[in-house]
Amino acid sequence: MTNTKNTIALLLALLAGPLHAEAIPATDTDTPSVVTTTTSEAVIAVGDSLDRVLARSGILPANRLEAALALEGVYDLRDLRPGDLLRWTTQAGDSSRLSSLQLLVSNGVEVSLSFTDAVEAVRLEPEVTTQDRQEAFVLDGSLYDALVAADAPARLAVDLTALMAGQVDFRRDLRGGEEFALVWQEDRLPDGSLAGEPRMSYARLSLNGHQFELVATDPTSPVLLFEDGELVQRSSPPIMGARLSSVFGNRNHPVLGGRRMHTGIDYAAATGTPVSATGAGRVVRAETMRGYGLTVDIDHGGGVTTRYAHLSAFNEGIVPGARIRAGDRIGAVGATGLVSGPNLHYEVLVDGRPVDPLEEEVLQAQEFASAADIEALTKGRAATGYSTEQDS
Image 1 (cartoon, rainbow, N blue to C red):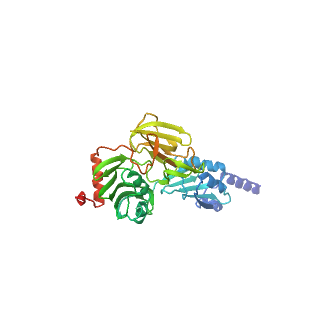
Image 2: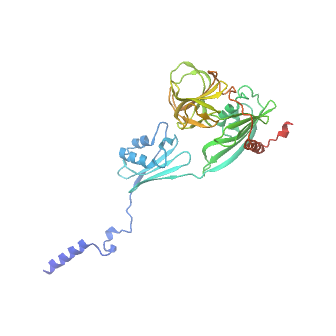
Image 3: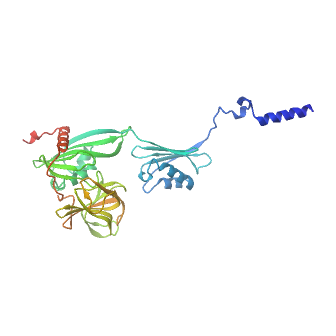
């Protein structure tokens, strides 16, 4: 009888649970359980996406969708570029489900995703320092080579050539020995690497006794061209800092094949890159054209029209009849129409006839410069040690 009572008492004590944690040393709650994870990483290649990379690594479709939806609020996955880094962890023994995910993208942004009770994404912006830089040098060859030798942004060579095209032909006019000066801004990440694109604020070319000066008061404003201190043109490149991928004239067509006349110039840029009007005017076309895809035509008066083709989208308000200023955003780079990849086809027509945008001055001149324009011109001259007294 005594043994029976003792057994019942023991069972009741077990059902009630321990009075103190130390009564069950085998389940010490002060010692966290150790979860082993496996870390993997991959560098984004051309044609890759987050989903493709994770699918190749065996992550379940539902888990991949869960990650994409969580990231949607803090990062646009279409911005992933070749060279960006993905790093993720999975629990040991189950490589098909994510424990965490991290994106290290080329502009220094870090995005972390944690798969806890509630999937949570956090975006960390890098600390960016803006630096003002200036260089003055003597040309001995192409402008591109000179910029590379001076450790200046070589990609600005395309913009500078196009913006001065009305007054200077860089392929024919340069003989060597011309003085050139450039002022630009660039953003640097904490590790010293570049973030984003360089921004030109002033450039000067001394050619045959004349001074040609470019002034950009800010990245979104039109660029002004002065000749010997007089404003002769106010315009804007369709894309700043893009690579010129095809020039005006006969070429092998990238889609149709064979030698065909290329009636404009092409800028290679990523889909979604903003496209700006090169001069003031009125929209006369904003629609899909055969071969050109989504296209905007702007009438600048005097028989001059500019065309922007292969766009992915039009900006709001870009409809026939809309008034446009130089530098206004009109759309975004795309790959619509007969094209092998995303780029902007930029065309200039005079009385309906295509002309080379890099050689002929066709947009109307601006008659006056504002006080802000003159202040920017003076600041650029001071930064490069130039005085008008040198010419007197």
